[in-house]
Length: 112
Image 1: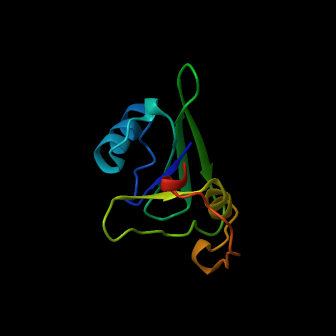
Image 2 (image 1 turned 90 degrees about the horizontal axis):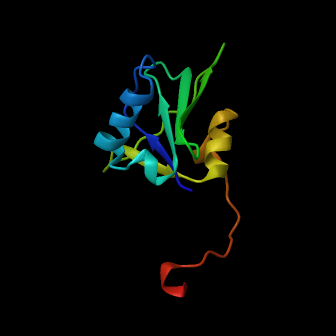
């Protein structure tokens, strides 16, 4: 499944319905179609993940005691698509943009 990070700061008082509306308005995706949706507040010290878990919506929520999550932006959209590795780095406080990635083979859409 895909990981979608909403780049618009999110009011962490939002719960299931409010976050679902944000995915529809800003990410232009339906949570029920699958994927993991990530939201960060303005101060960047709280993060929520919303996903469909077989028979209902689930939210995972984290508040940092010190420090912040990395601010990621997109020039053209209100969201970014992340890999599961990028999400793990973000949650661990590692700067995603400064990580040097080694060359790896990737199947292009034409090859499938």
